[in-house]
Length: 475
Image (cartoon, rainbow, N blue to C red; front, side):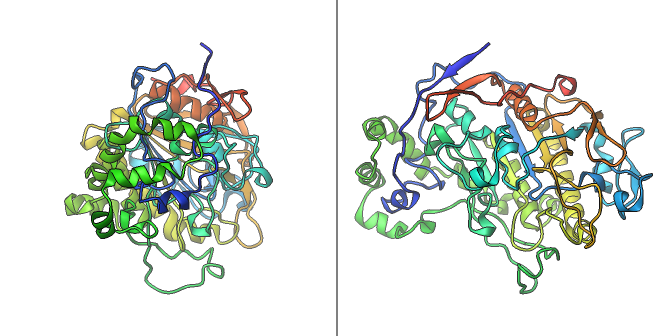
């Protein structure tokens, strides 16, 4: 059924994040206008839709993971294609994956593996992964902007799919692009407005030695640490002491109204003040980031890398009712999968062992806690890697073929969809687009992927950009 919702919004027009932060610390969760406020604005909904799942955890392997060296190996191909690694058997008869994913191999019978993800958007932005839109380019879409299509989490928030006192969508360990000092397109509210931007945690990773990132970009140095939720102390010119001495929290909210050029926000502020105060004073979101309450054995299972602790926090967030959580493997040092050089060294020394540990810990932990059936875990990157190994033992960009691994509610277990040709260059059957993946996620959350939202020009745009749920993988 075709549905068109909403209209052109002027929320936050002309108001910068810095102006809002200076207005008194309204943005406890970062990247928003007035505090996360709202139930879905007048969109005709009556609360959360009834979906097969309640939460999604996306592990975004930033940089583009090599499908040929992970889940779509070609052991009979020439060495310049098959690479250095050997396949091992998994818990799914006839399915082999990389030898450096031994833990993952043991739970593949719980997963759906798609080996035919394909598109033409050759960019490290998570724009296609998070919106389903593949018509972008780096000249137009390298940085986030107001006219962007909204990400999955932003649409979910717009539809009112958030728990009380909790954000609808959270990104860990920080916003995409933070290690390069930029904000990549993908996770934001776009033409829905900045109040539908996500919560971004912050992080300060530690390393066992000093290094020059430019010179050692392809030399993995493990980042350690725990992401944290921004506090009032993180905001410019605001401290708890000053808030207590000078103004009450509601007075801080009142101060911010004078900074808003969008009259709609100012007019409706009274309706949202209680929500604002609740979010500023609630301990629920902050408690989800407090890993000191976790048993040591559980923390050890996830490991101490920045991405292991991010995955553990992701589990705690969905347990607390957050709808969409993304963990992006981005940091200074190791984590990125952009292996133009030293592909096999990067994968063997950090990326594959870290993913093997982190992914296994997350799946087993969700299962132990009875959360796996109501949560979908998606592991993928923005593209695959080129079939032919280059002169510096790297693999270059290749969006034409990649993978997506799905585990949890609503998808089949021990199922493989699609494949690639003998060199892993192009899908040989069942091609799947990012739009199809996004449509599948919406479908499982109970959201119609054909739902239309109006962009800034008033043009109706389907939230999955023509993608269709992948019926073959659904239970």
